[in-house]
Length: 155
Ligand SMILES: [Zn+2]
Ligand SMILES: [Zn+2]
Image (cartoon, rainbow, N blue to C red; front, side):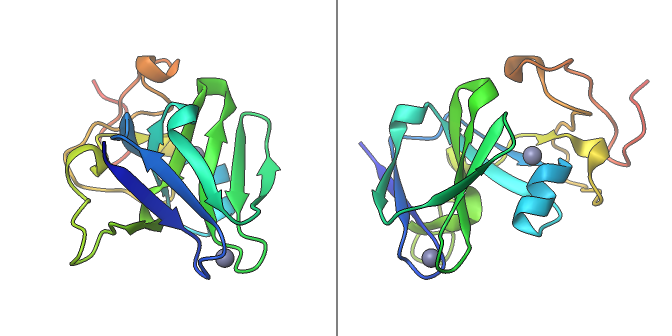
């Protein structure tokens, strides 16, 4: 079974994903944007027992639904518990073994995001042909409402 390692910037903290991710998506919600100082988050999720802390002592901040874990030394945010979905997710850019670069090429397959969520609360529009949900798809307990790539409602 495959093992994937994700680490913080200074490598003091690490988590391991055992097996393949269950899903991957882009999240444009304001909490992800502010937590990561980024236009959107790229999340790779699995059942919580498949993702374990293997090194270091993360600190966490919970908004209730989501609890994000970061390194107290370098402040990099590595993973999150999505309590409302009973899933744990790793931020896709944090994988180091293998990584998304020349020695890894894990950007495809189950690591390739399949959809955008909370698209209309975002600040960036993306033209990639993937489905874009105003909030969440039905599989994540949402209203399943999709929008166009420019954020306008679908007819
Ligand atoms: Zn660190
Ligand atoms: Zn989010």
